[in-house]
Image (cartoon, rainbow, N blue to C red; front, side):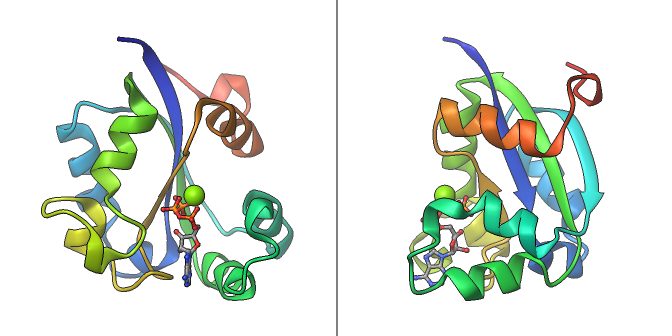
Length: 140
Ligand code: ATP
Ligand code: MG
């Protein structure tokens, strides 16, 4: 199995409810290492760039609004098959459909306030990490 890095966001609905520590505990318990982390307020431009793939979707405006509504914690996570492992830990996009014990099942409020983001593929992970971190901010 390969050691990979993935990009994670603890979204505004979760930071608002003081869930950064609880979510980080779930991440670390799953064997993923938090190798970079910072709390930022995303600008509209950053959110639009980040979710550009969804620009034509009906929920795009709501998505950008939600992601810029409060502070987020951006992270790089490292571990064996980190991309798939973190997607498993996050659970389904819609928390009502998420498996028991997943971050979204335990903490998310709704499909738009679903507490966390995780990269969906190796290429997006590299791109997303580079949007928020420079090399010397990642310490494995
Ligand atoms: P993320 O990219 O945030 O990790 P995901 O990969 O599970 O989530 P995507 O299909 O990439 O899901 O959608 C990106 C985000 O857009 C979702 O996390 C969710 O917040 C929002 N979203 C997706 N579908 C809907 C919808 N039908 N209504 C409202 N918001 C939605
Ligand atoms: Mg996605």
